[in-house]
Image 1 (spheres, rainbow, N blue to C red):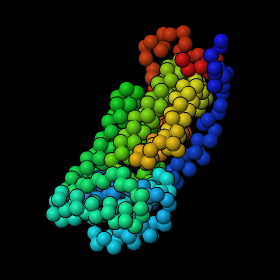
Image 2 (cartoon, rainbow, N blue to C red):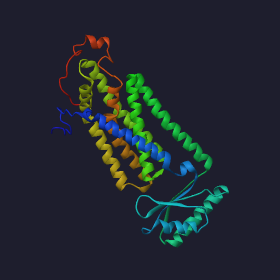
Image 3 (cartoon, rainbow, N blue to C red):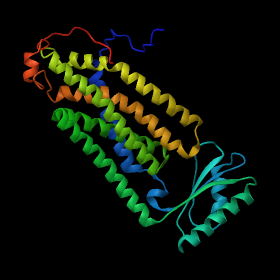
Image 4 (cartoon, helix red, strand yellow):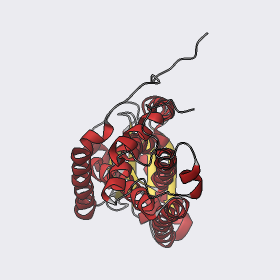
Length: 324
């Protein structure tokens, strides 16, 4: 039985033909995302702002205003009520009461009793309580984790390849993170530590995909030193396209199943991962590659003695080959 080939061996797509349009669109989306986060902010979860979050499953869909009115009547402070997962699932965020753990447990009990009385059959799924000091530390460490991860991987690529590749990888990662944050600001989905973990995973995936393309670019720069950089980048992208499609498609199918069929508690994480895989695949082709053109990468970038002595030095393009 012959193995299934999603991408034919002779595939020759001119990806870089749309590089200017793709880069312009990406820059606009980055600016829009930054502006959105700066003006509207993020719907920070209890992990970052402190307080209590009560997640409840109601017996039937109920207007959020009605739920909010019932919770406000308990006198526990201003409540933020939103839907998550199914129409019957609600998240209730309350300020942290004074008095420590005992007061927090008492407030949770009052919410549980109030919801059960107002909506018979209501079930409390979870109650999360985080103090203001702990939330500040989590926010600071989460921000440092994102910044150091991006800086570290860019430095790695810089040392492994050349500085142009490091710039391309860093801008690609910044693009992926910015668009993910903009999406969460636009949709007002809760942004908690699970989303930070998802973004770190996105950084790792996007970096891996970019390195696969960059490694083939470096190999082809040594083999086809007389080839123009745009055809060479197209050749390298087509040679790695089979691997990119198979990996991305497998992840997208698994994450889509989690988004639509998975538990509500990981909905934000799964959606962030799904969005990040799509954006990361796009950026490895339309962000990382064009930057190599604009930073002046040529066939002389990786000139070595082995390259000048080898029979492939100066060879012209012989056509794309499938990625093993």
